[in-house]
Image (cartoon, rainbow, N blue to C red; front, top):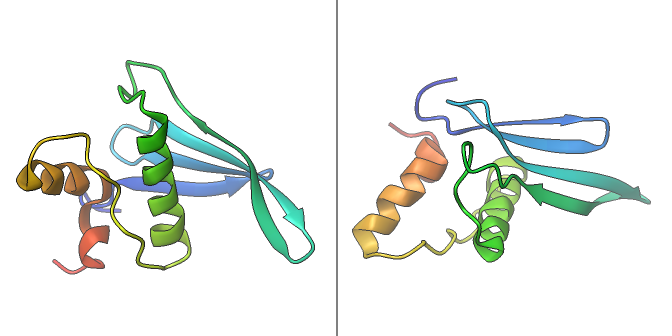
Length: 108
């Protein structure tokens, strides 16, 4: 793992855990259920501990969570989450802070 890797994601006992790689804080958790040959999310949680994560916007959390699932786990190219505000350069910095080198497919 390198500094540009922003997330540590693992699966355990039907739960996906999404931890920030630098701090180790668990930001998202998702419980899965199997339906036939497919899996679905039965519930998704975002931490609201203000010492670990300051966002409180559920729509933003869903955007980030879906980007992580589609982009990191499924290898798709989902649209970037909408930013929290500010101009395009603010959005670029925010997205780099969230996703690091994953935005450039690992290219340095």
